[in-house]
Length: 291
Image 1 (tube, one colour):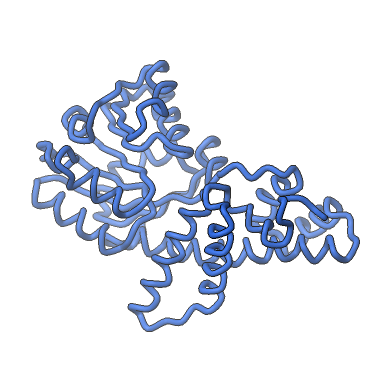
Image 2 (tube, helix red, strand yellow):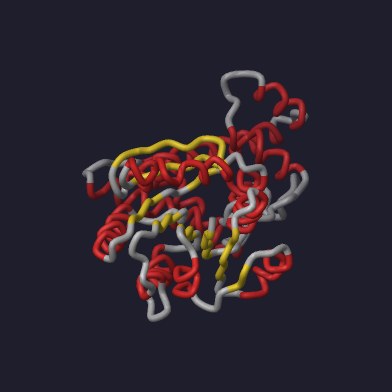
């Protein structure tokens, strides 16, 4: 199948490789062309604009940083919607706003195409290992058509409802992650101050009710002083702000999520916005290591 993929970043790159390994032809675009060079060497076809990607592909996947980037690649002067996409499917993997997901859905329908919002969770490791969780909004029949491709890049994939529901589900996910990340970093800070052996503590907690994905996957990175981004601090702040905005629209107060957002904003202000989310520990260990 001829597939398009726009966004060859930390996660997109691995997802493209999985699709290519399944013998699909990939047409790709990224704002920084050099980040796609490796994929082109492996057989992907470079396109100079999102519009050209859409001209060639039957299904076009997008995964960029912010809602404004989504707007640009779809509605910009060389965007996807400048192409004749009648009969095609666009799938946005970006974590964006439910309202923008609805807008994309309506625009695609007006052009004779279909759209799914399909944000993912699992970070760089999930993308690399094809174990991502994919949360999908749109028409169920279109979800069923794309499902074989979701299975190539993910482990858990669920249809959540009409357009925007995938993004709402991702907000629920990020609210949960905010709690586990703050809990994990405070746990490490506390255990260290108490003079405990951190590796022993982690082994113990992983076997009990405190076990969670953030602790199991990010604590070892922290102990190795590895703050490379599986997911950027700046993107997590974006996600938490979307979640809080949506909660406000529903007259719902989320005090713990507000505090997590404040902590991550403090981390970004300290110069760590391009670190991975595990860098939150630097609020306690400024150098990224135990004192």
